[in-house]
Image (cartoon, each protein chain N blue to C red):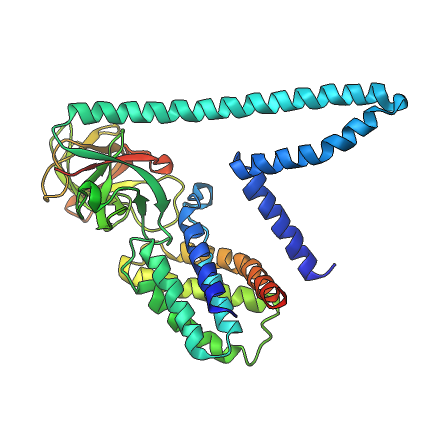
Length: 259
Length: 155
């Protein structure tokens, strides 16, 4: 077989995975189109007595399959709506409890490069957003705005090594600076807290909050929890690794503190 | 190739690159299509100025949809194309390995420029993985653009 044929087959498989593997309006529309295309032929086959019994069974089977698929689709949609509802309720609770003025936004894009960690949100300067404003999710700190247009903003995630926040250990009130762990390959997003005194008693599971120092992030926002802490034998500080409170894998709605 | 078509392709590929989810199962990386587009331009366009223009356009689009310093990737792609231009007189662009090599080289150039800004801490495996993925993506992009070009000529 020629190379072009392999490529065509590959493209077909890719298109199938992208278009029909997802419950998109286009995928559903395409399916309905093919069903309508095939239905006249199916009805014609039903007129032939010999294969009527088989066709009835096939009809029942197809109907049950269709019902099953419709129910599955409904379950998926309801699960999606429930998750979204929970996220929005959590954000609303934070908004009501917090002393800040906030703007809710949806995530509309990720970073186009693999070497930086940022997202794009659907609110911009027209909604009062300016660069260097903190961004939160329902679970905790997400990052800060870096570039703003009237309709959308780019948010530098806390996972990026260039995004730094002053932080405090909840139990010992030990200060430090939290930033993205590194730029290497990683299966789990991780943060690191640097400049933590080597004598400080850091325990796994300790919560870490923003300290309010630095002028960008207000005090008292949850950043994450300690997952690992080790002493550098020759250094003055401890190396503390954190699991971020915000779920960076599933960021959909966020809140920007505008005042 | 029609400049409007290649601009459309660059916009489409950059938007796709920014929209696709992060592959955490693959070490938290994202699929990149623009290195393949840059490689396509470098091995296809007759005039050097169009090659460089496309490289810069692709790089700037990528930077605009990223937290990267604006112009970083544009410069990387533009420099990478200088390496391809002499090669296209030596090697056949229709060869699969040539397309893959060009895609990988554009990716490595962009990675090195990014690391020069962000740091090289633990970056080497990521550079190799990204280059390998760009190499895999390149023939598909070449085929899609060649086909589009052929269709536009025979429409």
